[in-house]
Length: 165
Image (cartoon, rainbow, N blue to C red; front, side):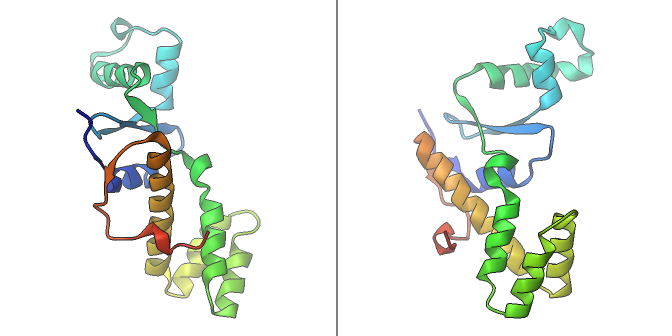
């Protein structure tokens, strides 16, 4: 029996992804599991469980299950999320012209993510930014879940409907 998945777990998994990892959702159980790209490569190259140290076996066995089962679907990754675009939309949503211009300037050029964070910190906008980003990620997660026909429970305080397109 298919269970409703936790929207919060999906959003948290998308938000916490780092380079070199892919998060998967089990559409039947709602479980989220993250596979390291190196584990996936090892399995692709045919490395058997007998060829690896004991301490790695459990993780590799789970990664193998995730990658070989049709119940597990890869969640949106950083290329699907496109955080730079979210930062730009956030900047465009700011009414204060000086702040909007500073945020838009911060996201261009080398070190854009760091300059953006420095700018929101300088203006005391950290909480506002994180709330906006959480809503944007929620919207991405909802669209993905709907596209995959996966039922979810709204166990998140936000409402992605409040975001600009």
